[in-house]
Image 1 (cartoon, rainbow, N blue to C red):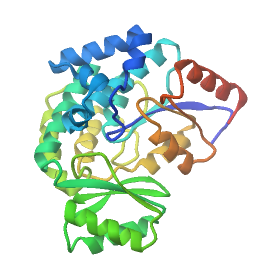
Image 2 (cartoon, rainbow, N blue to C red; image 1 turned 120 degrees about the vertical axis):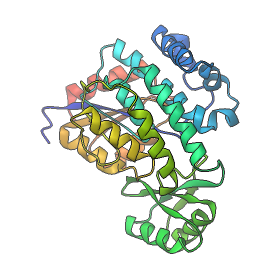
Image 3 (cartoon, helix red, strand yellow; image 1 turned 180 degrees about the vertical axis):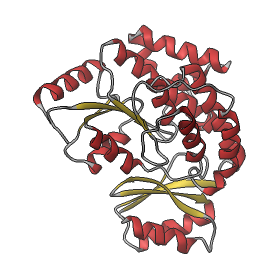
Image 4 (cartoon, rainbow, N blue to C red; image 1 turned 180 degrees about the horizontal axis):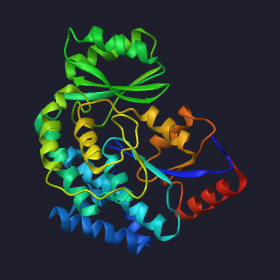
Length: 321
């Protein structure tokens, strides 16, 4: 890539990063953020902001609340950053983070996005009983070994790779029996760590096929705008050129693996060498550092402020990567 033509990528996190209190400090400091939460509450017809700010954690973790909560919090951050003059050259989101990215790229309004992800969350809960399935991150084991472990474990129950997150991390998804067996096999094959994720279902697996079909129907009823910022999509790590392709990939994404490593490499090829995680936590920037160590990354977590971000981006653009 041409390091003299540096581009900025905004990346938006997915489910699992939610935490009680997210966005509260932001609305206390910035009016723009408060307006975002007000718009989301109005669009949904209930006070989502209260679940984000005050919990309880059990309520916020429910897919129907976690997903719109993460999108709203991410867009609250985005609105503040944008008001201060920082805009991305390219965007991408991880799983439900794709909907945050669609707001940032101009394809959807915030109201449309939170209504869609609320529907998406309910469809995912309906597709498989909460708690009957789950997801686990496998760290330090090669992709081929993880795939082989899942195939071997399918004698116990359904399990398959769900997120190809980095060279050192693959997330698997399935029913509890299959998931437990695959976790055991991955440990035997040498996985450094196996971490059960804080999600309520077997997302991005074939067990979500009914949700994908139902979401495809819902998407047909909504008008999408043409993106004014390029967006790399999870299902194929490509930049779609039409609204129809965006809808198709969103429907497919629910029950297919997230190709996050390929998405990051696509953004790098596009010229992005500065990556900002816009939303709760710092999972995505940690993954990006594994995928492309030359990248400069910044996460707006509790240890960093908006002023820190401004200094980081300006410094990275001026001083090189």
